Length: 150
Image 1 (cartoon, one colour):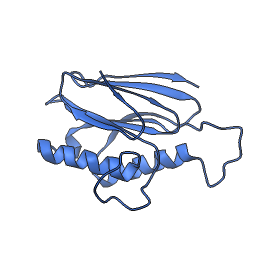
Image 2: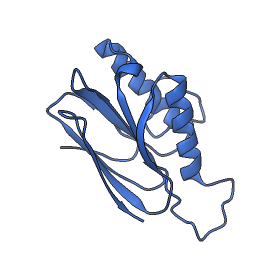
Image 3: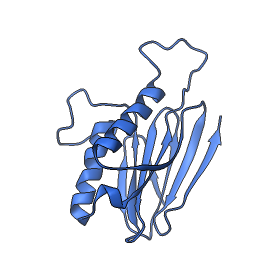
């Protein structure tokens, strides 16, 4: 099993399972049903302060999306061919006043915007709320499991 820490990215084949633990961070999973390939990112912030230029840093949504684009180019696949799921973006401190906005909410907004801009369609999502989630993606089947503790 591949375990992603914050800021990490993985794209692989059908013999892999990918797992991560999220709070306000976001995991985007993509899976190609015909080829049983896909991946997951775990980003912390909605945008890099330097834009989406290489070298990419998976801590940022725009860089994680660039990493997905590179994987699709390597595999000669199209965004529309993938099943996409979105997880995370929790408000980890709901009792505190939000200064500058809730990072979880901003992460969710960035994910939706970047996915749409890059031709991906979200099939399912479990986002927002409070607490943390464990997410597992099985590349052989495309099944995802979440354990939410809100």
